Length: 398
Ligand SMILES: *[C@@H]1O[C@H](CO)[C@@H](O)[C@H](O)[C@H]1NC(C)=O
Ligand SMILES: *[C@@H]1O[C@H](CO)[C@@H](O)[C@H](O)[C@H]1NC(C)=O
Image (cartoon, rainbow, N blue to C red; front, side, top):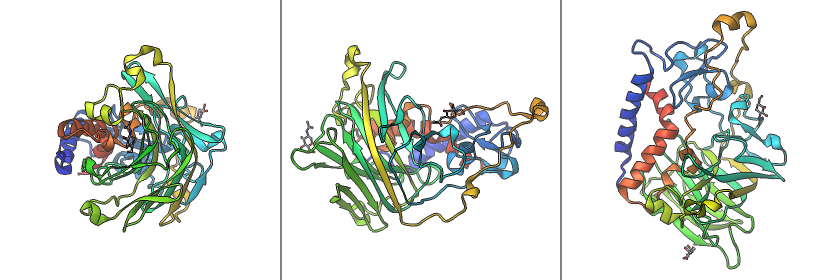
């Protein structure tokens, strides 16, 4: 264990101050250099600097919305847990993040980068794809977070995972950096070993891989050939991981020196390339190299993970009115539009999740077998890529 969370946080914080200094004129209090107007009311950080968003996702506290520079301090609270079952029976059960209306009852999951070519609803399944990407020099996969957050409760999903060396499928709960760095509860599936499932947890950004455990499925079963129901049953007293209703692991706070996930989290599904252009420990863990890494003739292959359904049972139900989550975004009239319409009708390609690091879903679990430096570097890189905007928003308040 060589990546104490404090130093990690310090590095991120220091980098954040620099990023912030570079993008915000000194005299301004808020994150955006200019107060946002009612046509683009919400100031949201992004990898390319903060901007005034005219879409509901940019108004969400959970996306880093900055009250100080938002119009009428308009930022919407995090939608918390409401129990649901999603069968993915309609294409409408998955939307683009940038089409989110602000109604967390309207949809359970959205597509994070990179979009529709990587995550689709097909034949009653949510299908996530991993495809070769020349620019990255490895596969680019999909990441799908839930719209609502949870803290304790049960999440089950019926999944058939992606196969092949280096290919990793993940089903996890995960916080973001503004809550607490890196609490996670993980299921991970190594595409080259379909007889095994892996469980893990992380707490407060502590990169301690020793908490990962592997389990063999009953003889004749496979993660990639058929569907199984995987469950995370999470309470303050213990986490249970179950396959098809059978508990394979129970972990208590005492088992992990009280380094036990407690922070609110979203549910994520992702498929990612752990076996190409990754640190050696990651590649080894993922049983890489991925076929396309050294064999260009494989680069047209698509690796797929199938999610038939997801069921969330919350420990605590969110009883707030859905209206609370809906920002008021006034479309510009032609008269007002001429002068006041926002420069930034940015569609969100710079949302801060544009790197494939987010495709790992489980950023801190990317290098389970890498000691110290590789692990820490990769985690910092992925935290920077995915979460700096949110830290920036927090830092701007001080
Ligand atoms: C998102 O909105 C755009 C433009 O309004 C539309 O073309 C597209 O189909 C929508 N996508 C989804 C997945 O809802
Ligand atoms: C697959 O996983 C099982 C259980 O963890 C392990 O015993 C076996 O050695 C693994 N096979 C390979 C090829 O890694």
